[in-house]
Length: 414
Image (cartoon, rainbow, N blue to C red; front, side, top):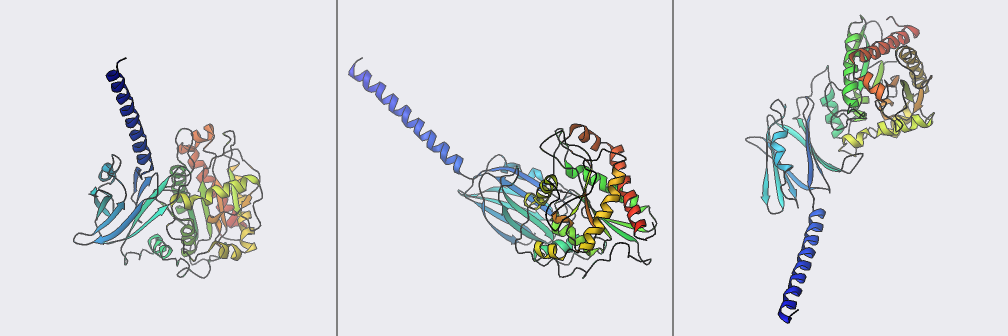
Protein backbone atom coordinates (compact mmCIF):
# COMPACT_ATOMS: atom_id res chain seq x y z
CA UNK A 1 0.00 0.00 0.00
CA UNK A 2 1.35 3.47 -0.94
CA UNK A 3 1.82 6.19 1.63
CA UNK A 4 -1.03 8.30 0.12
CA UNK A 5 -3.42 5.29 0.09
CA UNK A 6 -2.44 4.52 3.68
CA UNK A 7 -3.27 8.12 4.70
CA UNK A 8 -6.64 7.98 2.89
CA UNK A 9 -7.54 4.74 4.64
CA UNK A 10 -6.45 6.14 7.99
CA UNK A 11 -8.55 9.30 7.41
CA UNK A 12 -11.62 7.20 6.53
CA UNK A 13 -11.17 5.13 9.69
CA UNK A 14 -10.80 8.23 11.86
CA UNK A 15 -13.81 9.88 10.20
CA UNK A 16 -15.85 6.74 10.75
CA UNK A 17 -14.78 6.53 14.39
CA UNK A 18 -15.60 10.19 14.93
CA UNK A 19 -19.03 9.74 13.32
CA UNK A 20 -19.71 6.72 15.52
CA UNK A 21 -18.63 8.67 18.62
CA UNK A 22 -20.84 11.64 17.70
CA UNK A 23 -23.77 9.31 17.07
CA UNK A 24 -23.32 7.68 20.45
CA UNK A 25 -23.09 11.04 22.20
CA UNK A 26 -26.13 12.29 20.32
CA UNK A 27 -28.01 9.12 21.18
CA UNK A 28 -27.11 9.40 24.84
CA UNK A 29 -28.12 13.03 24.89
CA UNK A 30 -31.43 12.24 23.21
CA UNK A 31 -32.13 9.42 25.64
CA UNK A 32 -31.41 11.72 28.56
CA UNK A 33 -33.78 14.44 27.30
CA UNK A 34 -37.37 14.49 28.51
CA UNK A 35 -39.80 13.10 25.96
CA UNK A 36 -43.57 12.87 26.14
CA UNK A 37 -44.61 9.32 25.31
CA UNK A 38 -48.40 9.57 25.77
CA UNK A 39 -51.17 12.13 26.11
CA UNK A 40 -54.53 11.18 27.63
CA UNK A 41 -57.69 13.18 28.27
CA UNK A 42 -60.46 12.20 30.72
CA UNK A 43 -63.52 14.49 30.42
CA UNK A 44 -66.36 14.20 32.93
CA UNK A 45 -69.11 16.32 34.42
CA UNK A 46 -67.03 16.76 37.60
CA UNK A 47 -63.75 17.82 36.03
CA UNK A 48 -61.50 17.20 33.03
CA UNK A 49 -58.09 15.63 33.46
CA UNK A 50 -55.23 15.87 30.96
CA UNK A 51 -52.09 13.80 31.53
CA UNK A 52 -48.78 13.99 29.71
CA UNK A 53 -46.70 10.91 30.40
CA UNK A 54 -42.95 11.20 29.95
CA UNK A 55 -39.69 9.36 30.50
CA UNK A 56 -38.50 12.05 32.94
CA UNK A 57 -40.09 14.60 35.26
CA UNK A 58 -41.40 17.54 33.25
CA UNK A 59 -40.59 21.07 34.38
CA UNK A 60 -43.41 23.51 33.74
CA UNK A 61 -44.90 26.94 34.35
CA UNK A 62 -48.61 27.72 34.19
CA UNK A 63 -50.76 30.84 33.95
CA UNK A 64 -54.29 31.83 32.98
CA UNK A 65 -55.39 34.26 30.26
CA UNK A 66 -58.82 35.76 29.63
CA UNK A 67 -60.91 36.84 26.62
CA UNK A 68 -61.16 33.99 25.90
CA UNK A 69 -60.36 31.99 29.04
CA UNK A 70 -57.22 29.93 28.49
CA UNK A 71 -54.87 27.79 30.55
CA UNK A 72 -51.30 28.09 29.31
CA UNK A 73 -48.66 25.56 30.32
CA UNK A 74 -45.04 26.06 29.27
CA UNK A 75 -43.09 22.80 29.42
CA UNK A 76 -39.37 23.43 29.69
CA UNK A 77 -36.35 21.62 28.24
CA UNK A 78 -38.39 19.62 25.77
CA UNK A 79 -38.91 19.39 22.02
CA UNK A 80 -42.18 19.03 20.16
CA UNK A 81 -42.49 15.42 19.00
CA UNK A 82 -45.03 13.32 17.11
CA UNK A 83 -46.93 12.47 20.31
CA UNK A 84 -47.33 16.10 21.36
CA UNK A 85 -48.43 17.07 17.86
CA UNK A 86 -51.54 14.89 18.32
CA UNK A 87 -52.71 16.78 21.45
CA UNK A 88 -55.49 18.69 19.69
CA UNK A 89 -56.93 15.41 18.40
CA UNK A 90 -57.36 14.04 21.95
CA UNK A 91 -60.15 16.44 22.94
CA UNK A 92 -63.82 15.76 22.30
CA UNK A 93 -66.31 18.38 21.21
CA UNK A 94 -68.60 17.48 24.12
CA UNK A 95 -65.90 18.10 26.75
CA UNK A 96 -67.73 20.30 29.30
CA UNK A 97 -64.69 22.46 30.03
CA UNK A 98 -62.18 22.44 27.17
CA UNK A 99 -63.09 23.95 23.80
CA UNK A 100 -59.83 23.21 21.99
CA UNK A 101 -56.11 22.67 22.48
CA UNK A 102 -53.14 24.15 20.69
CA UNK A 103 -49.49 23.22 21.06
CA UNK A 104 -46.25 24.45 19.55
CA UNK A 105 -42.53 25.00 20.03
CA UNK A 106 -42.60 28.36 21.83
CA UNK A 107 -38.81 28.74 21.85
CA UNK A 108 -35.91 26.31 21.26
CA UNK A 109 -36.28 24.82 24.75
CA UNK A 110 -39.98 25.31 25.53
CA UNK A 111 -43.18 23.67 24.31
CA UNK A 112 -46.33 25.71 24.96
CA UNK A 113 -49.71 24.02 25.50
CA UNK A 114 -52.78 26.25 25.36
CA UNK A 115 -56.18 24.95 26.48
CA UNK A 116 -59.01 27.24 25.42
CA UNK A 117 -61.88 26.86 27.89
CA UNK A 118 -65.65 26.85 27.48
CA UNK A 119 -66.19 28.35 30.93
CA UNK A 120 -64.23 29.87 33.78
CA UNK A 121 -62.23 27.09 35.42
CA UNK A 122 -59.91 26.41 38.30
CA UNK A 123 -56.83 24.44 37.20
CA UNK A 124 -54.78 22.15 39.42
CA UNK A 125 -51.45 21.27 37.81
CA UNK A 126 -48.99 18.85 39.40
CA UNK A 127 -46.59 16.02 38.64
CA UNK A 128 -46.70 12.36 39.64
CA UNK A 129 -43.82 9.95 40.10
CA UNK A 130 -43.82 6.58 38.30
CA UNK A 131 -46.29 4.03 39.70
CA UNK A 132 -47.52 0.68 38.37
CA UNK A 133 -47.23 0.77 34.56
CA UNK A 134 -47.08 4.57 34.41
CA UNK A 135 -43.91 6.61 34.04
CA UNK A 136 -43.63 10.28 35.06
CA UNK A 137 -46.83 12.27 34.55
CA UNK A 138 -47.73 15.94 34.32
CA UNK A 139 -51.38 16.24 35.34
CA UNK A 140 -53.75 19.10 34.47
CA UNK A 141 -57.07 18.93 36.33
CA UNK A 142 -59.62 21.57 35.34
CA UNK A 143 -62.61 22.18 37.62
CA UNK A 144 -65.60 24.47 37.01
CA UNK A 145 -65.14 27.84 38.67
CA UNK A 146 -66.32 28.50 42.22
CA UNK A 147 -70.07 28.95 42.51
CA UNK A 148 -71.01 25.80 40.57
CA UNK A 149 -70.99 23.42 43.52
CA UNK A 150 -74.61 23.65 44.69
CA UNK A 151 -75.98 20.29 43.44
CA UNK A 152 -77.46 18.82 46.60
CA UNK A 153 -78.24 15.50 44.92
CA UNK A 154 -74.61 14.99 43.96
CA UNK A 155 -72.13 16.94 46.10
CA UNK A 156 -69.07 15.56 44.28
CA UNK A 157 -67.87 18.90 42.90
CA UNK A 158 -68.07 20.57 46.29
CA UNK A 159 -66.25 17.66 47.92
CA UNK A 160 -63.51 17.75 45.30
CA UNK A 161 -63.12 21.48 45.87
CA UNK A 162 -62.81 20.94 49.63
CA UNK A 163 -60.38 18.08 49.02
CA UNK A 164 -58.15 20.24 46.84
CA UNK A 165 -58.13 22.90 49.57
CA UNK A 166 -57.11 20.25 52.12
CA UNK A 167 -60.33 20.79 54.05
CA UNK A 168 -62.52 17.83 53.27
CA UNK A 169 -63.92 17.29 56.75
CA UNK A 170 -65.11 20.81 57.48
CA UNK A 171 -68.55 20.63 55.89
CA UNK A 172 -69.34 16.97 56.55
CA UNK A 173 -72.10 15.97 58.98
CA UNK A 174 -70.74 15.23 62.47
CA UNK A 175 -71.88 11.65 62.07
CA UNK A 176 -73.96 9.54 59.74
CA UNK A 177 -77.07 7.76 61.04
CA UNK A 178 -76.42 4.31 62.39
CA UNK A 179 -77.55 1.58 60.01
CA UNK A 180 -81.08 0.45 60.78
CA UNK A 181 -81.87 3.76 62.51
CA UNK A 182 -82.74 5.81 59.46
CA UNK A 183 -86.30 6.40 60.60
CA UNK A 184 -89.50 6.49 58.64
CA UNK A 185 -89.09 10.08 57.51
CA UNK A 186 -86.50 9.19 54.89
CA UNK A 187 -85.45 6.17 52.83
CA UNK A 188 -82.51 3.92 53.64
CA UNK A 189 -79.52 5.33 51.76
CA UNK A 190 -77.02 3.02 50.05
CA UNK A 191 -73.78 4.46 48.64
CA UNK A 192 -72.46 2.36 45.75
CA UNK A 193 -68.78 2.74 44.98
CA UNK A 194 -67.59 1.41 41.59
CA UNK A 195 -63.84 1.05 42.13
CA UNK A 196 -61.12 2.81 40.13
CA UNK A 197 -61.97 5.01 37.10
CA UNK A 198 -60.35 7.50 34.77
CA UNK A 199 -56.58 7.22 34.76
CA UNK A 200 -56.82 4.23 37.10
CA UNK A 201 -58.18 1.24 35.13
CA UNK A 202 -57.99 -1.21 38.03
CA UNK A 203 -57.13 -4.80 37.17
CA UNK A 204 -57.03 -5.81 33.52
CA UNK A 205 -57.91 -9.32 32.33
CA UNK A 206 -56.03 -11.32 29.73
CA UNK A 207 -58.63 -10.29 27.14
CA UNK A 208 -58.14 -6.61 28.08
CA UNK A 209 -61.31 -6.37 30.16
CA UNK A 210 -60.92 -3.39 32.48
CA UNK A 211 -62.10 -3.60 36.06
CA UNK A 212 -63.25 0.03 36.11
CA UNK A 213 -65.71 -0.63 33.27
CA UNK A 214 -67.19 -3.86 34.64
CA UNK A 215 -67.78 -2.56 38.16
CA UNK A 216 -69.45 0.60 36.86
CA UNK A 217 -71.87 -1.56 34.86
CA UNK A 218 -72.65 -3.71 37.91
CA UNK A 219 -73.14 -0.64 40.12
CA UNK A 220 -75.58 0.88 37.62
CA UNK A 221 -77.57 -2.36 37.57
CA UNK A 222 -77.62 -2.45 41.36
CA UNK A 223 -78.70 1.17 41.58
CA UNK A 224 -81.63 0.45 39.27
CA UNK A 225 -82.70 -2.45 41.47
CA UNK A 226 -82.43 -0.39 44.67
CA UNK A 227 -84.45 2.47 43.20
CA UNK A 228 -87.36 0.07 42.69
CA UNK A 229 -87.48 -0.65 46.41
CA UNK A 230 -90.11 1.43 48.24
CA UNK A 231 -87.88 2.59 51.10
CA UNK A 232 -84.39 2.72 49.61
CA UNK A 233 -82.31 5.31 47.82
CA UNK A 234 -79.04 4.66 45.97
CA UNK A 235 -76.21 7.09 45.24
CA UNK A 236 -72.94 6.39 43.40
CA UNK A 237 -69.48 7.72 44.15
CA UNK A 238 -68.96 7.90 40.39
CA UNK A 239 -71.27 7.33 37.43
CA UNK A 240 -68.67 8.14 34.78
CA UNK A 241 -65.19 7.07 33.78
CA UNK A 242 -63.55 9.51 36.19
CA UNK A 243 -60.91 9.23 38.90
CA UNK A 244 -62.23 9.97 42.41
CA UNK A 245 -59.78 9.94 45.36
CA UNK A 246 -60.53 7.31 47.99
CA UNK A 247 -61.13 9.89 50.73
CA UNK A 248 -63.64 11.73 48.57
CA UNK A 249 -65.57 8.49 48.05
CA UNK A 250 -65.82 8.07 51.82
CA UNK A 251 -66.71 11.74 52.27
CA UNK A 252 -69.51 11.50 49.71
CA UNK A 253 -71.07 8.62 51.66
CA UNK A 254 -70.96 10.70 54.85
CA UNK A 255 -72.28 13.81 53.09
CA UNK A 256 -75.27 11.85 51.81
CA UNK A 257 -75.77 10.31 55.28
CA UNK A 258 -75.52 6.82 53.85
CA UNK A 259 -76.72 3.89 55.93
CA UNK A 260 -74.46 1.46 54.06
CA UNK A 261 -71.42 1.70 51.79
CA UNK A 262 -70.72 -0.96 49.14
CA UNK A 263 -67.47 -0.78 47.16
CA UNK A 264 -67.59 -2.99 44.05
CA UNK A 265 -64.48 -4.53 42.50
CA UNK A 266 -63.26 -7.32 40.24
CA UNK A 267 -59.64 -7.76 41.20
CA UNK A 268 -56.74 -9.81 39.92
CA UNK A 269 -54.12 -12.10 41.38
CA UNK A 270 -50.75 -13.27 40.09
CA UNK A 271 -52.06 -16.84 39.88
CA UNK A 272 -54.71 -17.05 37.16
CA UNK A 273 -56.19 -20.11 38.84
CA UNK A 274 -57.50 -17.90 41.69
CA UNK A 275 -61.26 -17.55 41.40
CA UNK A 276 -64.44 -16.89 43.31
CA UNK A 277 -66.33 -14.04 44.97
CA UNK A 278 -65.19 -12.44 48.23
CA UNK A 279 -66.38 -9.84 50.72
CA UNK A 280 -64.10 -7.66 52.86
CA UNK A 281 -64.54 -5.35 55.82
CA UNK A 282 -62.18 -2.98 57.60
CA UNK A 283 -59.74 -4.24 60.21
CA UNK A 284 -58.26 -2.06 62.96
CA UNK A 285 -55.65 -4.65 63.92
CA UNK A 286 -54.16 -5.69 60.61
CA UNK A 287 -55.25 -8.06 57.87
CA UNK A 288 -56.90 -11.37 58.74
CA UNK A 289 -55.09 -13.11 55.88
CA UNK A 290 -52.18 -12.60 53.51
CA UNK A 291 -54.60 -12.38 50.60
CA UNK A 292 -56.61 -9.65 52.34
CA UNK A 293 -53.43 -7.68 53.07
CA UNK A 294 -52.32 -7.98 49.43
CA UNK A 295 -55.72 -6.86 48.17
CA UNK A 296 -55.87 -3.88 50.54
CA UNK A 297 -52.42 -2.77 49.42
CA UNK A 298 -53.38 -2.93 45.74
CA UNK A 299 -56.70 -1.13 46.30
CA UNK A 300 -55.13 1.58 48.48
CA UNK A 301 -52.62 2.18 45.69
CA UNK A 302 -55.48 3.58 43.62
CA UNK A 303 -54.80 7.15 44.78
CA UNK A 304 -51.20 6.91 43.61
CA UNK A 305 -52.22 5.50 40.23
CA UNK A 306 -55.09 7.90 39.69
CA UNK A 307 -52.99 10.76 40.97
CA UNK A 308 -53.66 12.69 44.14
CA UNK A 309 -52.29 16.15 43.61
CA UNK A 310 -52.59 17.62 47.10
CA UNK A 311 -50.54 16.28 49.99
CA UNK A 312 -51.82 18.60 52.73
CA UNK A 313 -55.26 17.04 53.11
CA UNK A 314 -56.44 17.18 56.72
CA UNK A 315 -58.82 14.27 56.22
CA UNK A 316 -56.19 12.08 57.83
CA UNK A 317 -55.98 8.30 57.51
CA UNK A 318 -54.79 7.80 61.06
CA UNK A 319 -57.47 10.04 62.52
CA UNK A 320 -60.20 8.17 60.72
CA UNK A 321 -58.63 4.85 61.54
CA UNK A 322 -58.66 5.66 65.25
CA UNK A 323 -62.25 6.90 65.07
CA UNK A 324 -63.66 3.74 63.55
CA UNK A 325 -65.91 2.21 66.16
CA UNK A 326 -65.85 -1.48 67.01
CA UNK A 327 -69.64 -1.50 66.62
CA UNK A 328 -69.39 -0.21 63.04
CA UNK A 329 -66.92 -2.92 62.08
CA UNK A 330 -69.12 -5.50 63.77
CA UNK A 331 -72.08 -4.27 61.71
CA UNK A 332 -69.92 -4.38 58.58
CA UNK A 333 -69.08 -8.02 59.25
CA UNK A 334 -72.76 -8.89 59.69
CA UNK A 335 -73.67 -6.98 56.54
CA UNK A 336 -70.84 -8.61 54.59
CA UNK A 337 -71.94 -12.04 55.78
CA UNK A 338 -75.42 -11.52 54.33
CA UNK A 339 -73.92 -10.48 50.99
CA UNK A 340 -71.52 -13.44 50.97
CA UNK A 341 -74.36 -15.93 51.48
CA UNK A 342 -76.18 -14.62 48.41
CA UNK A 343 -73.05 -14.41 46.25
CA UNK A 344 -72.40 -18.08 47.02
CA UNK A 345 -75.62 -18.93 45.17
CA UNK A 346 -74.43 -17.43 41.88
CA UNK A 347 -70.66 -17.99 41.97
CA UNK A 348 -68.04 -20.02 43.74
CA UNK A 349 -66.80 -18.34 46.90
CA UNK A 350 -63.10 -17.64 47.25
CA UNK A 351 -63.53 -17.69 51.04
CA UNK A 352 -66.51 -18.70 53.17
CA UNK A 353 -66.18 -15.80 55.60
CA UNK A 354 -65.77 -12.05 55.45
CA UNK A 355 -62.07 -11.17 55.36
CA UNK A 356 -60.60 -8.00 56.85
CA UNK A 357 -57.77 -5.57 56.13
CA UNK A 358 -56.98 -1.84 56.21
CA UNK A 359 -58.92 -0.71 53.14
CA UNK A 360 -58.84 3.09 52.91
CA UNK A 361 -62.20 3.21 51.14
CA UNK A 362 -63.92 1.43 54.07
CA UNK A 363 -62.83 3.92 56.74
CA UNK A 364 -66.07 5.85 57.29
CA UNK A 365 -66.20 5.83 61.08
CA UNK A 366 -69.98 5.52 61.31
CA UNK A 367 -71.20 3.69 58.19
CA UNK A 368 -71.09 -0.11 57.89
CA UNK A 369 -68.89 -0.56 54.83
CA UNK A 370 -67.88 -3.56 52.74
CA UNK A 371 -65.82 -4.23 49.65
CA UNK A 372 -67.22 -6.87 47.27
CA UNK A 373 -64.83 -8.70 44.97
CA UNK A 374 -67.37 -9.91 42.43
CA UNK A 375 -64.91 -12.32 40.74
CA UNK A 376 -61.29 -12.54 39.62
CA UNK A 377 -60.83 -10.69 36.36
CA UNK A 378 -57.44 -12.42 36.07
CA UNK A 379 -59.19 -15.81 35.80
CA UNK A 380 -60.10 -16.48 32.18
CA UNK A 381 -63.44 -18.11 32.93
CA UNK A 382 -64.46 -15.45 35.43
CA UNK A 383 -63.32 -12.67 33.11
CA UNK A 384 -65.67 -14.10 30.49
CA UNK A 385 -68.55 -14.21 32.99
CA UNK A 386 -67.90 -10.67 34.20
CA UNK A 387 -68.40 -9.39 30.67
CA UNK A 388 -71.91 -10.88 30.42
CA UNK A 389 -75.04 -8.94 31.34
CA UNK A 390 -76.47 -12.12 32.91
CA UNK A 391 -73.69 -12.50 35.47
CA UNK A 392 -73.56 -8.76 36.18
CA UNK A 393 -77.29 -8.83 36.91
CA UNK A 394 -76.90 -11.90 39.14
CA UNK A 395 -74.22 -10.11 41.17
CA UNK A 396 -76.39 -6.99 41.49
CA UNK A 397 -79.42 -9.04 42.60
CA UNK A 398 -77.29 -10.93 45.14
CA UNK A 399 -76.01 -7.71 46.70
CA UNK A 400 -79.52 -6.28 46.89
CA UNK A 401 -80.78 -9.47 48.56
CA UNK A 402 -77.97 -9.17 51.10
CA UNK A 403 -78.82 -5.52 51.76
CA UNK A 404 -82.47 -6.35 52.39
CA UNK A 405 -81.60 -9.30 54.64
CA UNK A 406 -79.24 -7.15 56.69
CA UNK A 407 -81.79 -4.38 57.19
CA UNK A 408 -84.39 -6.99 58.14
CA UNK A 409 -81.99 -8.41 60.73
CA UNK A 410 -81.48 -5.01 62.40
CA UNK A 411 -85.19 -4.30 62.59
CA UNK A 412 -85.80 -2.10 59.56
CA UNK A 413 -88.60 -2.53 57.14
CA UNK A 414 -87.44 -3.68 53.73
